Amino acid sequence: MANESEVMRIRAWLDAFIDSHRTGQEPVDSAIQLKAEHTLNVRREILDIGRSLSLEAEDLGTAEILALLHDVGRFEQFARYRTFSDLRSEDHARLGARILRRAGVLEGWDAASRSLVLFAVEHHNRAYLPAAADSRSLFFLKLLRDADKIDILRVATEYYRGLHRHDAIPMGLPDDPAISESVVQGVLAGAVVKMEEIRTLNDFKLLQMAWVFDVHFPRSFEIIRQRRFLDYIEAALPATEPVREAAAAARRYIEGPHAPQRQFSGDHS
Image (cartoon, rainbow, N blue to C red; front, side):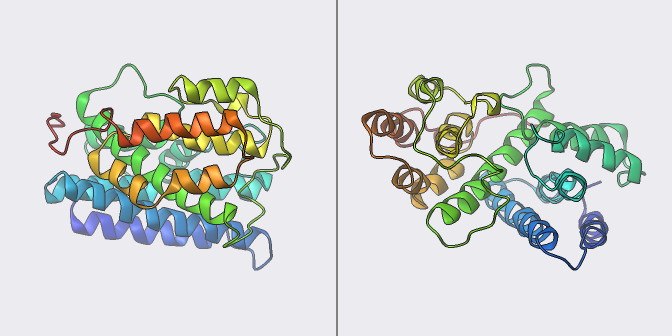
């Protein structure tokens, strides 16, 4: 079902959906625009990764649709709650899946294709991959999660570098020197850090650093290295020994033997 005309239809629906959440007032419209730009950037990143894997046209179309739809919940979330914090509002991924069902966006698709899209949208923000999933759904979920992380890292590191100062990005977390020991230990252990553990903006920066432990494809590793996301996050943290150790652990992972090989041998058929 993921042919060019379907991609164009989904894009047109999404544009109208996003526009329906614009109010003509700040800070709502700037937050809506932030996520609209993020959506298009995730689309670009997922196509980049997909092409590096030599995906065929229909699979690239599926990946493109996932990128376009993955954050539909964000627009309604901010309109309702004035925050992008799931903990302070509701899970934007589950909200997004409900919106897609309610709007009938995927009507006319076969059941397997609908299920794949809803599965990816609903699980793209989980700390860990779901244990029970068919290989094709899991493959596309990994693609989406990689592309999503890459662009969030771009947005976050631009914020930390002072290139823009959007109030929605730190999600109301206190910007003080404190760093939770459990968060540092999680990064040192090579573990993905959960949002429930986050107490400060510095914790959130380390959580983003730990995302490298949940990246799946060679091109994703290359992008993270080339764009120096880990360097920028470390520079935005206190220059303490725990921070240096945590950054070194993340850097070893993204640069070392844990990185996937160039060849892709997974079966996503």
